[in-house]
Length: 141
Image 1: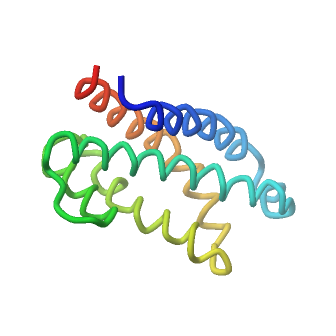
Image 2: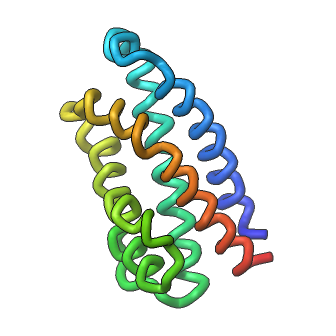
């Protein structure tokens, strides 16, 4: 079993994924008119993205395939190792940028785009989390 820190992050990510599903089910008008829902969407998505990146970093380190210190490097390493299904590769490549916008660009977050991302990419993010989690478990049973 991966380290307790990784397990905790994935557990939080799974809870965040459920909360994001609820938020994505809200009508657009409700989402845009409720600041609390928008702030929760930002935070839950941040938690989910960080967990995906942490899993990728764990896998890259365990396999000795890390290509550099950045999140982009880690994502490219797990993609190059064939660990990310073809249909999730572009989404995986976008995660470091999404994470950076949430963490550093808080004044510039476009909630119309964030809402659409939740509606269109949430299940794929959940699949990517699962794929990486299964690989992490194989590496550290």
